[in-house]
Image 1 (cartoon, rainbow, N blue to C red):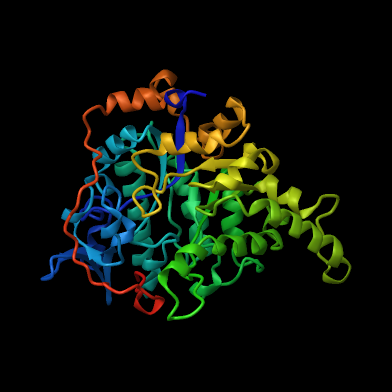
Image 2: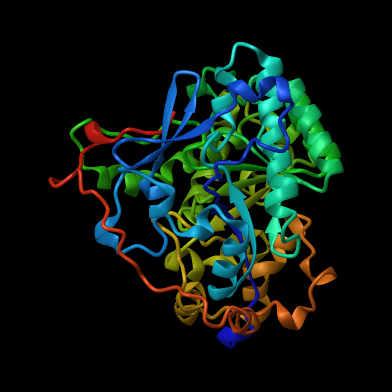
Length: 425
């Protein structure tokens, strides 16, 4: 396959919400409690909401910066690449990276919308959640429906309200929603209860894909407070491995056979061993654990119901055929610190070069699976020949993708440990 002929659809990128997020979709009576941006004396910009002081954490938006300026320090909008929060610039950044389509996870409300749950007034909380989704669907994705895939956040405190929101946003063309990879750390019931049944039923009815992103439970894999932050970064995907085991032994797939779950930013290299371990545990212990997958092995159920997503994973790519190329999607993670930007096509070609994958198998993973699972049809708007890496980059000719220093304040001159890591609200 020629690099310029690839079509790339990323199912995991991120948006840094702009300051006018709640201007157009929130009822007037709630505008005085809406999150707002304040410019601080130290030059940073922070969201203020209730008693929360929420910085734009640096690692959320470092695309285009030199790695030595990466860090957890709060930032201001003028330190960020405009494509992180300006949709027109985002589309240009995508084109310069040869990326046709992108699904964008939230930043401010958390991956699973947990921020708004802090409100005692749940009518106000629901209004904020819906306003966020309306902004995302109509203003962010609506600005480029051939390029951006809508993704809703849930009113996580009420499964019936989530179900209503699934139906509401589906009518607006949104068929994907976030959900924590483990609700328990958020003080909510586990996947093993019937608490979430209205939500799962709504997703089944609408064909809505459920996206479990690493870290969406707000719980990171931390071994010790004095462990270097490198430990947390390395182990971050382990959250999704735990979620995978929890999900497959939960009643979700048995009760709702049409539900599909995407494990976002989880990688794929661990899948072969996980499936082997899954089947061994089941066959060796089902007589006394009473696990029951009928006439199938749990690995078969898993691969029928789960979408697997990776940014860079050479081992996983070499085994993609064995895993199942029809269940794998690519990610670029723009603008986070793991992002492959602006050279995603080059880095993917390096990955494919170490495999014997055929062009049709690569096409499945680079765009066909994403278009199928997320009901994304850019070809109905844009001619297919204009969707390739080469065509998109030609459209963005002259767009500046150079690495630029912003002179970031350096607050951590010593190696950072987990004791110095302060997550957002």
